[in-house]
Length: 318
Image (tube, rainbow, N blue to C red; front, side, top):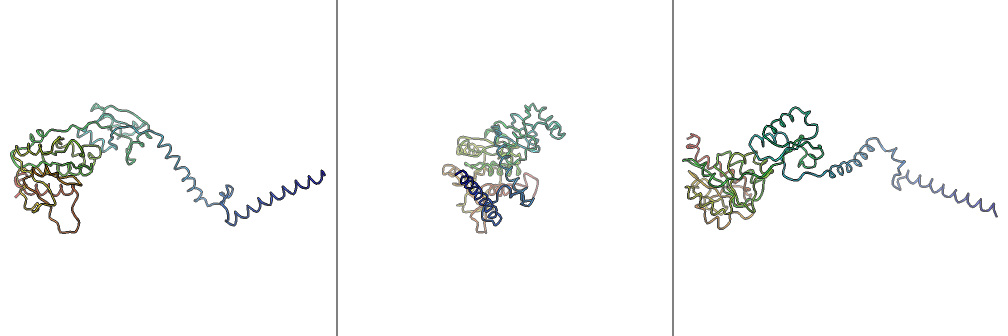
């Protein structure tokens, strides 16, 4: 009886060994997934790519584990220097630890100290977490509330000659708003008027798209666009609205002298109450099949048409 049990156990182990051997042959023929020991046979480049792919999620998890500071930030050395130069309101500056060993960054820190800006050194991972495009260059400025002007401040800039004021009737996109402010500043407009609700304002995004122009001309926030137009009319401005329904083009519009140019929102255009305040409507001439330009492009074209009409008086050109 004892001998029978021994023979039985040996037969059982023999069958297990044969199954493992059979499994190995199946792996060689490609009928099952590659086992751990088979990785050594993989090409070196393939193993390196696999290791890199396995490491990437861990790096992402490490970055996500760092909590990004709350607030609005201007990042990068050039943008920070421009914000400091133009007087953009800055709460504090976040500098990457070890940045004091960078000569260029150290000079910028000296300028920030001279301007009375609070400096805080933080781990570089913290700057990585708040960065929108990963190019903070070791510095990020937390910005404060923008100092908006009043309509009266804009009128104070108007001299005796031609003047242009851009009035935005609830333009909501930061990119469009920033581009409009940039164009207005380039042609020498006296200022920009926007609504204080449901409208784009001065943010880090619009500061960037305006190329810093938001700091070079007054921007007034008002509760009522129609009432602001009344104030401009009282100061001698001719109010013109940009509308695709206008009968004449900007080439024939009365753009000489003082003009308040009203641009409507991206989706709805100029509202009815504001439209009733317009002295004339105008549009860009068009030959192509595209429906229209966006509000930023259209504003730029109309700004330069106003400048062309008044160039003789403003710039001494015929």
